[in-house]
Length: 385
Image 1: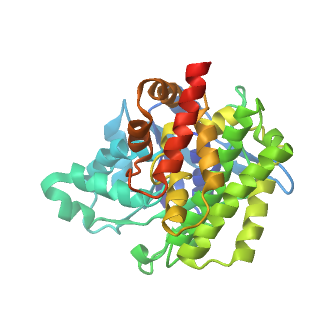
Image 2: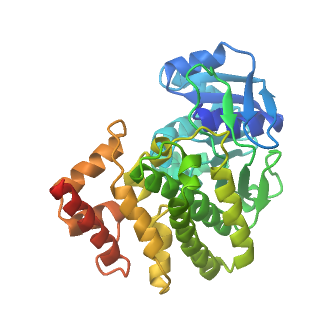
């Protein structure tokens, strides 16, 4: 069996690639980073180190890498003969992955089993998005090519911090992970991925993860950056920051109860587990890494505005989530392009227009005025600085 995985970075090697390896797949990593591809191909094995209580080391073998930029034909051949294709590239990059999958499907034997495609991204319906991009790239052959693949949405969860510069292709991760995959598209032929669990309805798993893990992680980063704290674990050692993050997650849990009927006690235990993971001192994770790409993180269907909009529509509290958005507006990192652009827009755009464009909220939405007020507060602080 063979799996092609787009994105040979830390998540690719330390999470998705590891589980595919443990399922018996030969793993072919695809990436555009020349040095990374060369480094992967220069070794016969790498180690995934689990940092923290109960952590063990996992040795990964049976892999190779292709450079999709310099050798697209090799990637096409790999996809044409693969059993599984996965991604961990970021939702905005999926449109660049789609043409490569189209090329592979075009060379795939019509008699082969359908290619099993899963986008493992921090986004709701990421595989649906990838399928849409594949449809657009396929042109007139779309019907024939799509008949050669099946597409399943997933929810993935594992903290992979920034890696040491001298770590090579080894990866340090947290011991905990979750990979939920919708089962319906596969019929009776599920991919073999140890540790993954297949579910009939993925929506509660996706939103529980996005609105708890991702919301909590980003909120910790932005409140921590505001306080001048360097590490995520140190941020949650601050009682004020911990209280603010907890309050935001209580609001997202209320949404999950209202939307999916999830058990409040189960969600309380889940929140506590998540915060304990963030406090893991063995994970050297920084607020700058977690806080990067703030424009994406305050967009309409992401970890703050998404649940806050749902809460506002139901008349539920949104104060703590809006406070997290306000902290995100203060995130100022010269090394992060989105942070630079965020601060530029705050200085150049009127509050109403800024709120519409960056959050995707309609001015008539019940959440809009609270977010606009947070924007105005940030803009006044910038003018007075």
